[in-house]
Image 1: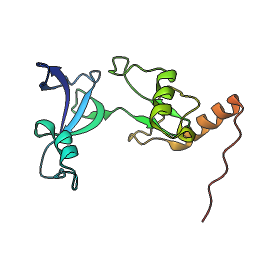
Image 2 (image 1 turned 180 degrees about the horizontal axis):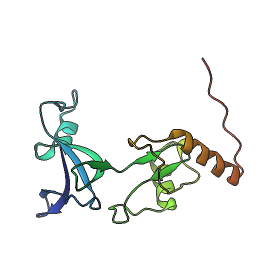
Image 3 (image 1 turned 120 degrees about the horizontal axis):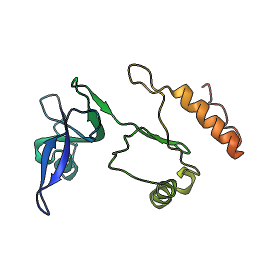
Length: 156
């Protein structure tokens, strides 16, 4: 496994360079080895894109800490809730309007968020998202916006 940043060599080619283990510099997580899939079934184009340069490109953004552990940056998107935990030196700078406009262009209208919230995600010491806290935050925001409570899940 490798967390890298890409430096532009010329118009077409990029050089893969490991990020420093400082816990601040973001990069993409790449994998290579016999435990990684061979490719996408009947989709050679997607396989070629995913395995560019001989490494499997996960698309996940992460930082490497001095002790060698990596921390994957979380991006959670649901029907009306978006939250991200990224460093201020993030490669991505978006606004609420940018995200809503992108969703309106690429999703069905009923799937688009009405509001976008940026903030830290509550996680356990092992890094698992505390979904009950996300639900509580979403409920508070919905009450502030005057949105009715969603129907309870079916118990089928």
